[in-house]
Figure 1: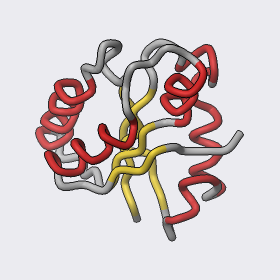
Figure 2: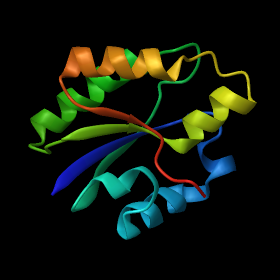
Figure 3: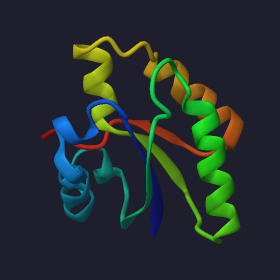
Length: 117
């Protein structure tokens, strides 16, 4: 089973997708970007660290805490809310560059997006 951490946009998370219900639905049904897994479990969710681009220190803290609590994380998804924030709002993050940096630093695959709802 693939254990996934979803990084959400701190600004629009509960405006665009209240309570992340769309991410949970997509993971349960293996739709959207979760279709790549045979089995998937959302192990953790966290905000991006807010603007202006504090995603790396935030993920460092989250992954240290996951390690301390013995919570494996196999992959990191940058939530659809982050995609929407970068395309339709003034989010300064370059998602592709962030994905490369995250994968390089933490040695985990990074997927941009979660669902298509």
